[in-house]
Length: 107
Image (cartoon, rainbow, N blue to C red; front, top):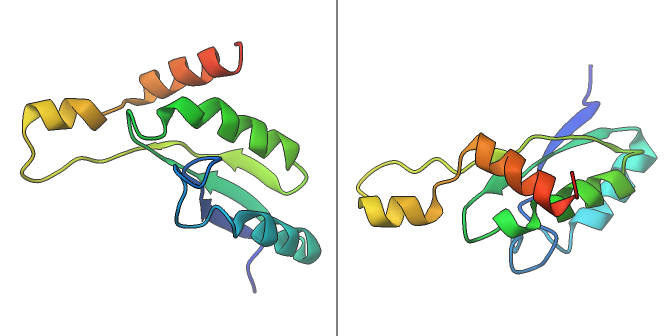
């Protein structure tokens, strides 16, 4: 059987917004190119943390569209004991994401 598609966490285009794998992404994409593996970026979107980079994520995917076939934006899930003020600080919806992508990519 094998693997022909990779879902890859990709929370931003800078080391600040994507500290867990920012430096590894180019190497992972090159490896996927060599093996014929396609990629879906899966950014976890958090308001005030990385929502200002959604357009940059789309543009980065476009620059690598030979291997990146989709971006699956995932708004953060806020559960547990959290006050309303803190929840509203980070909560973002899919319509919010769409609006930011539209603004950051000029439609």
